[in-house]
Length: 338
Picture 1 (cartoon, one colour):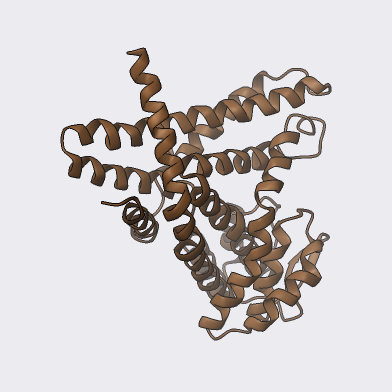
Picture 2 (spheres, one colour):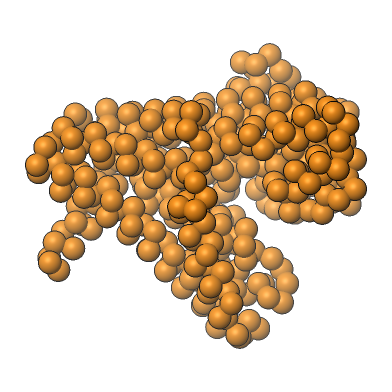
């Protein structure tokens, strides 16, 4: 099959896996193993005050990227080149499936509904303590004693903020560079989540991954209001409010990128989102459980639209060829050794 057809099948397969299979078990998920490696490195870093910590942070990113990129390329090249020498059709089908599976581990579209639906059920039953405990699993702030309005707001904030980190960015870099691009972003984003804190422990160690994550999310965060507007129009929401609100309010969040999708979603949904003592965005009422479910639909559709337009076009014209070049080079390198 031509490469462009392979690209379409990879994208569609990844979307179907995300929708009907869901997340890879945590015990074998690449992000879990990335996190374990980074935690081990973190435990052994002694000098955190000098420039050596900056170097360690950069080298840690490079090591994790090369390791997981190498594992991914090994798996895909074995099927595309190795198995195809025996049976071309079987090798191609296996390559499509494995590439789709690996790509799927870098993004999430439908997973937040599985986290948020039980929270909404608890809120509807009036069980605030259970809702507080459940929402703590998807946010970093302390949720103990949080009221129902702020629990629902936390859900909407997390869902809309992760449009960029969990969908648009890994999809963009997969489209441009294939699996190496998705791994490049996911490593930076995970390291930013683990080490990107301005304190004595991580200010230097997490400097490179935090800044690199900001750079990688610059474009995707700023185009997100347009896709939210398109999804909002298709869902019959106030789509015209998306872009003006994002331009006016995106600076309310500490992160330079997260405010764009959050403010756009709040405007389209007609709600307010509040993180006490940090920001209030939007002009409507605080969200209800119905609004949380509407937010899920809005962000899911925005993600699908981006995947089936920007990501598909880029991967079919650029990314798949780049990935194949990496696979050929990787397979030739190992072949020369053995």
